[in-house]
Length: 361
Image 1 (cartoon, rainbow, N blue to C red):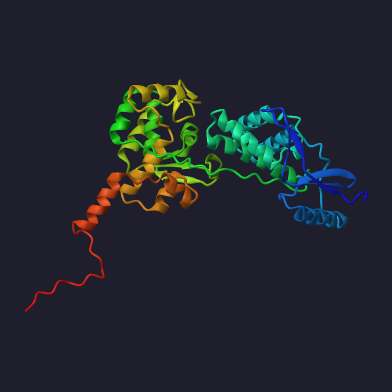
Image 2 (image 1 turned 135 degrees about the horizontal axis):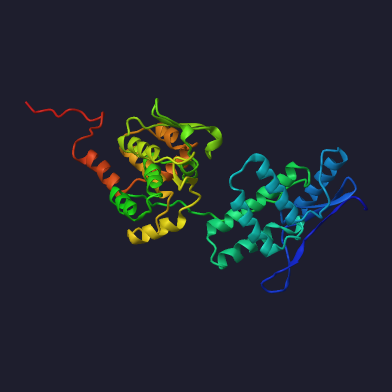
């Protein structure tokens, strides 16, 4: 009956083979406010798909279902997400745009949102991984697509969003710097980059936080460096006392003596935008190929923990918002495990349940 909608299996042309393929998951086709709307039923069961269609039609009659025509395209999804990122002040917009570029290259920017089915997105993941893209990178791109759908739903452009299932990704790096590694690296780095790296190793802060640091954040009387909520990734203010840290205090005093402009770390008076090339060259010459700047943050977490600083205090000093994220950085080495075993087996730690030895009479 006209106006009652339908369920169907969508088809598409596989770009790799040129053959037509049909999805197993059912899709719903109905009208909202006189305009066609399509969405995935997220099921291969016909009865479940029909039940969801009847639910949508009931919501439509009650005036609780919104949605625009199915002419919404990937380009429009992209524009909506980037507009949302701009309003929110999201700092990951550049990376999101790179992800969207890959999506548009595969699907085409004029691809309709209704055609971006879980089956087709799974094919996209397989294609990206086959093209030697990192698994974590491909999964991130699909998450960005999901975020774009989420914005469209929030803005009433779609009634619902598809659910994309992603493969499990083990992407936790395990690198860190020893004191010898750091000393070798500093010898190879340019003079204007060396202080930034020392600061990152001492504080465990993120690279952007260090490069954006200005002198008004340094309080000499209280010997603290203070960041506002808008200057941190976690959107929370942070204070790092440096008065009892001679190396860090000396570093800041040296930078102050050679200050030139607003930024604590600068290149001829201007903010250092990047030192990626200098970093890679220095790592190669120091025999540390494959090391990342972010490994300095992980090293700081390890060194703070070894010094007996509590987990809560390390999170406050370095800027971790959740304990689970902090534990991804808090690397326990074989040496740490050996020290722990030594405490147990050389008699330094005694269980409270152990009874004292009794000498027979």
